[in-house]
Length: 371
Image (cartoon, rainbow, N blue to C red; front, side, top):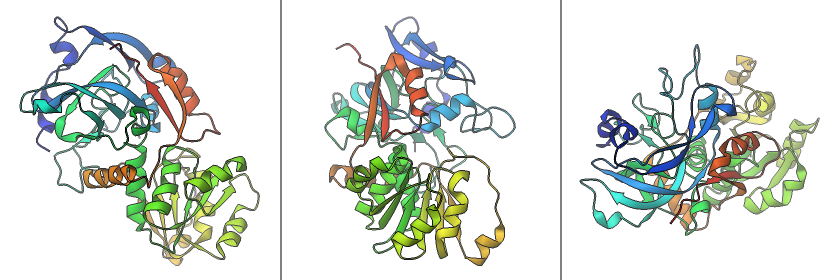
């Protein structure tokens, strides 16, 4: 990706344009900690460099990733973001971004101005197919300022036409959808197979259900907390909906499926890990991309090798997968699931709400910029 070097090496747009750009509102993380580390500030509008676009943000969905970045949850010894050296504060978070192109930098066709776009959320110099886990992978909202703002700059080659006409609806897929798509690709879900999806009512989980069922043709068992969501989960493509609160969850999974399942798509972690391994068939596949129910677990390796279980760690995905996902959305195979929207100024309240249980779908920030 030829624009990575330019994005990384140029000075902060705030430093470059402080004297000549009108201010915009942005929510910035000032350091590691709780939501009190989020501050609404007036900062200069960034200027697009060569190969970049200036985008007026219309919607930015919330993900676990920017919360964990603020909390320093990606660190192992100290606090860090996606990279071990940590986050350069203040940082504007937000990676699920849609908006309107309002200015083009040099080397960009001016005809892109006025286009409605959705942003592929990372840069990398790696070969296509490995860009999402390359050493130089850098993430918008962590290594670059993101979408909790009225404007953002991003490489033109990483901005794609929105799959839906609505900005808010198109904003819920970039990170969650890409992550979900890559998870289903990794387990190589097939028609006739049964896939169990944990956290199925959440942002990634609800997309795991749709992608596995409606794109790859698998039979899906959705695991949620509240069974009042059963009908909505079935509308998304789930064949069966069960509650993790059941004292006999493993037995219920085996009963509704008529035996062991083929694969698990997990965003919960410890809380359902033992159950997942128990209900998988020999040769089953387990893919994890989150740990909302516990980041550490006890594992008896005998379960893994005696059952020939393949385990995958997964986050984000490739540009090719991103384009495949956008096509499936435009074709109506995947649809947006939105729980609630918040104005930009209430980003802290929105993040706190995001962490509450019982939500169904994505939380979206709306900058409400003046025309």
